[in-house]
Image (tube, rainbow, N blue to C red):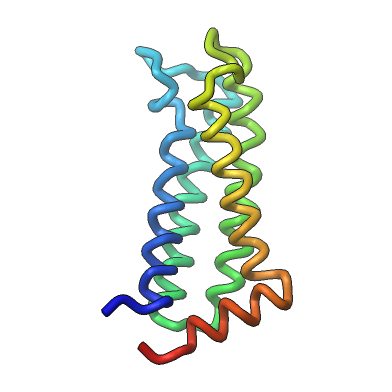
Amino acid sequence: MWSFRGLTAIGLFLFGTTFWWMTSVMAGRTPPPAGRLWTATNVLAYLAIAGFSVTAWAVYKQHAWWDTAAVVSGVVGILAVVPFALAQRRLEVGLGDMGVQINLWLHLLGSAAVLAAALVPAVHAWVADHLDAPG
């Protein structure tokens, strides 16, 4: 049987892996684009992947610091979008591509939702209650 805690941990981990889509390797160019903005995007995307993985582990293992890890991951996730958007604008595709727009909004809204789960008292209480529920 699947528990809320297990599904939340899986969801956090899978969401974190989607930051791979923001790296220069996934920009659809050979060789991948380079430069300071892409380097910043790559570093922040990898940090977000690691952060959401740690957050997922903390949720799954019921560590009390899961919300701190969620805040750090959410902030890093939002920060990763900034250089990605600026770097993407310099490519031929730009920001007009629907896939790029989905990528941007997915990571902004997903990171904001994780921040809300950790920082908004009513949302945090609901999530924490369900994470602590047996099952």
